[in-house]
Length: 307
Image 1 (cartoon, one colour):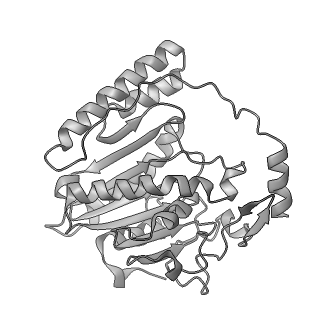
Image 2: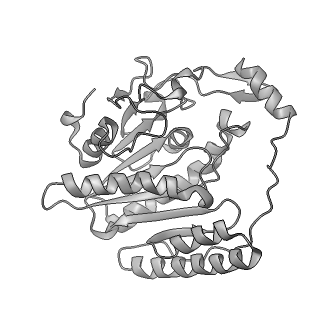
């Protein structure tokens, strides 16, 4: 059935795929970030986002203009308003953080829908602020650093977008390390298709933990096959529809479709933690079991994580 669906998707182009591109300036070219250069980087990217808002306004796209303008008031490590858009936003004081969470989104995420992704980062940031022990500082990085696939598309069923995104994620983690320093504990929290991206980037990635949330699979048969020193975690809410997706990998018209072993299965070998009764978009819901456990993972409170 999965093969048939993908074959049909290949044959029948999606309506609206050729949406007109909203004009925007190219991203600013900056040297690699450091604690000393962080404020200047934020200022340059804010100015770029403001210019993108002006161009979108002139083009007549008020939705994009409003989204760009909102971003122009934030701490942006990176901004590119062209196409669906790329954004790396920092919540908190990255230069002095002892614990850093990097969030990687799944499908249908771009500047136009960025508010939904930011809400997850904000929920984690607020929970960390309440529960972090005295003397420990935290930051959250919302990394929309790749062109995400559409939920109903051929690309969402293959690793192609993830393979393209992996170098950018490695660079983003390297930038985080350059700013926060080698002693900071860095956790990668990867939602849905974002877990495929994290798996592709995992080899040699300088992070302490990788959490796969509502994952369709990673393209790897086991956690060990990701070839990373990081602890691999996995969770799925009881009401998450992704549990109904077939966990297989097949060749369709010369393309590998599907992502193989279920990350919450014993065969995969991840540390499975409780996510409560939530659905596919509820892993960062305030007050949820999932958010509580993610907070513990980020803080390094591994024995407190519930299963």
